[in-house]
Amino acid sequence: MAVLVTGGAGYIGSHMVLALTDAREEVVVLDNLSTGFPWAIAPGAKLIEGDIGDEALVGRIIKDHKIEAIVHFAGSIVVPDSVTDPLGYYLNNTVKSRALLAAAVAGGVKNFIFSSTAAVYGNPKSMPVFEEEAPAPISPYGTSKLMTEYMLKDSHAAYGLNFVALRYFNVAGADPKGRTGQSTPRATHLIKVACETALGQRASMDVFGTDYPTPDGTCLRDYIHVSDLISAHMQALKHLRGGGASGIFNCGYGKGYSVLEVINAVGKANGKPLPHKLGPRRPGDPAGIVAGAQKVRDVLGWEPKYNDLDFIVKTALDWEKHLAKRNQK
Image (cartoon, rainbow, N blue to C red; front, top):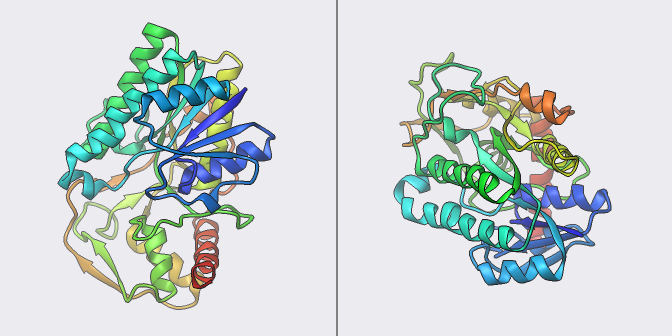
């Protein structure tokens, strides 16, 4: 029996593959390598290059490798891009997820873990935001992920597919052992961009919006270390295998940091201030969003280890330095 990880050559997916192989699980990765890298996949995992929307291919993988669980990371994730190309996002994140789910149901897969997002909440009415709040996405990205949540709920009711959907807040940092990290060129993650700026790979960085109703006027986000996020996935897998109920869970720390606070933290870690330019808001960005994340602790038994912005920044900066050396070679 094996676990199928879609998007396992990408940022978060490669950390999941590491955790699974560390746990001596049999792992198959399905990735079209549009933003991922074969070298990011842990030794021992099998890579199949292909698309999650290829229902026949997924069906063969499920049959040939006796897949009993799917962890689904593959998809498009840039909020502003979803505003300018909504149909592309509905294709990648919704239509192709539907094909993946159809293959999972047809192949008798028992457990499904989905990479969802806090973007389903849009501009929440209060902070922290809990799972009970009605979703109200303000970007096609958030809507495309919410649609997949609906498909999971309906597939559970109709076909008995057990699932956990994890609503990520802002994922950052890198494997503390330095084995993988955020490697995608032109990535838009704030801490990634800040680290590139710190190392001189960017002349400066932009701050989008300084007039939000937050303490310093810049967007407020709940940053979660990628390894803590992955531990929530591992707990979710254990939960489902043990007969636990399907459900939706926030994944965050319950504390927000502003864009300027993050820039200052990266500057501090690098030993000098970061050059940055203040600019107008981007479409689709909520002013602030912080997780109400007690449910994931109570139900899945999740215990975060890296709840510290300075540590998150350090691992991200260390990875960026490693990546720069790798790219030079």
